[in-house]
Length: 223
Length: 274
Image (cartoon, rainbow over all chains, first blue to last red; front, side, top):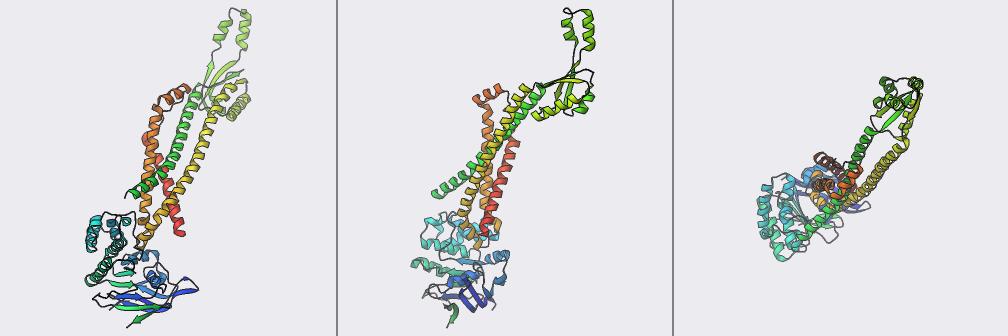
């Protein structure tokens, strides 16, 4: 199987003297379902940020979907991001846009026609059980509903890699279940690679997955 | 969402109002300039310099000295001599006829400034045979000072309003960019290129510039038809009906777009560097 993420002696830092991730080696195979665990402040979000280029590599090597992150240009970063779906802990929805337009965003960026974008958005909103809220705005939805919209947006363009940062952290059981089911379904039907940072792994996931643990700036595989 | 729509409307007005004021002052200044030029050309048509010469002067000679000469006309002496015929003796009349100088009335292509008039007088006096140059300087100066004052006042007004409006536009742009920065950041996380992230801002300013230019156009279409204005300017002999809707609104739209697009671009670049 080909590797979709490779990190060699990777170091990540917000402040040069205090690295959050220290000389870590890590790799993810295509179509893997990965859970990254670790206590708060262990660097889970920091590591995920480096995968979609929001945090530059301090030293070492990081390759994501064939792009070398330590020397990636603005244009190539945009290209990489078109193949990644990100689910953020704080949703990051555009409040001035309707739910439908938020979900259409990655498709609009990819250059699909409005009709195609709308069709795909409707399909995904049906999957996350929000068809009836299509014309609402994010601030009119509950936290769980907003996260389901963010989920639909992350999956809209059938990304090669899905990165989720605490996707069910603040959600009720129903919304959590909808999100895990959808991630399972995407992995099965689309074949996307999924990397999830979370505190708790659902008991009844029903698929194979790998677990990694972040501690003291290092990533360890959990047997 | 009602709140978002209200906010968006407020944002548009906060941009349209200073842009409208700026375009209005530019158009006002242009119209005043046109009216003054129109007034000047009318005055130039009416304004004459009288030259007294001991010898006949040809128009070619005068044109060589004064390139701004429009026409020259010799004033007939016969009329004045005829008036004196019954009052003085025949021999005196013959003497007078032989010694009476030549009078010329000179019109210029455009109304000269005070300095230009002094220069014209100097040049004419240097010509051989010319003994007197009458420029009616006092009345000329009165008109000219009025026109110069109008132009200066209009220019100062436009400059002052222009600076204030541009500062207001830049302030509004900064507010917009802050409001749009979260959206632009999220779009960037999904790989949106620069033009797509900024498209909403550019679209907004294009629409607002169009609205502001059209509003100014409508106001200037209505002003000359207002009874009060029309009678005042008619009394002063100033033509206010010199507004050309299509070309003037087109020019205002171009100015509005240029100012807005430059302001948006500068602020986006500034934000990117931060």
